[in-house]
Image 1 (cartoon, rainbow, N blue to C red):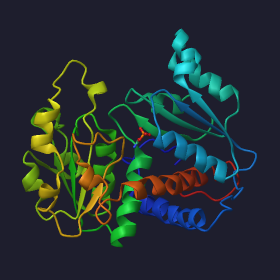
Image 2 (cartoon, rainbow, N blue to C red; image 1 turned 90 degrees about the horizontal axis):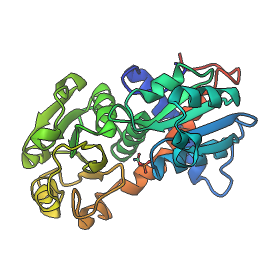
Image 3 (cartoon, helix red, strand yellow; image 1 turned 180 degrees about the horizontal axis):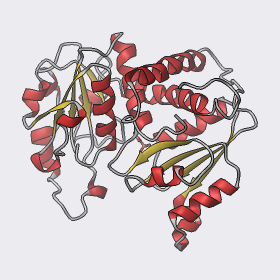
Length: 311
Ligand code: CP
């Protein structure tokens, strides 16, 4: 593959390969104060973010720097996008600067593909609209695999605004490909029609979806994507779909609690659950994000560096 635009184009062995590569970087990152490996020295990485981000932008920047790349960030709010420049003109401009790898986040599904078609270097999707967020799904899979030792057969319950969630979409595809039993639960108006095509089973009752779960992945309500549609009240949403300690007791005793962030505490998840010392894997997810992004940047630039690629 030249680009990483989604989980959908990947074969299960390719997902496993990226997770295995990321394991190496977890070790390096934990090994002490010298985390540098300069295999991307001399390469230019542009992070072009047309939507806000804390975790994804920072971890792609840290990942690129730990690999020795020259990393530059383009924030759309401070760019000429605000003056009306089209996405294609922006892509052509980035390309003219001879970037070696471009990381893009955009609010529109398919925008990353559009840019990938216009540039001469690998493009990594850092989240596009409702479509995909592949590195999030990889870091989630790595977190589960490291905690449990394997993913096959794990019952993973994904709960929240599934309709608008690129995280849910990429996770359904990746976890189903890796052999997990994926359940998704959402208010009926926020459940996409194609859940079963992505290998998951839809539920309307959160309690039923939690029964015997090994992993619970909570999503936030994406008010910014409702577009005039249904926005449940915070109190009502918490009553029906909020993860409380009482609800969590329906899952397996050693259940893992995950959230891609940003969290809305007291809405989809209670602090007692989010901060639970045994159950919560939320900060581990962030740590795995750096390792996964180092693996993706390394693997995707191998062709440019004259190193054998992955396919
Ligand atoms: N999980 C995630 O994509 O977080 P950010 O929006 O902070 O990057």
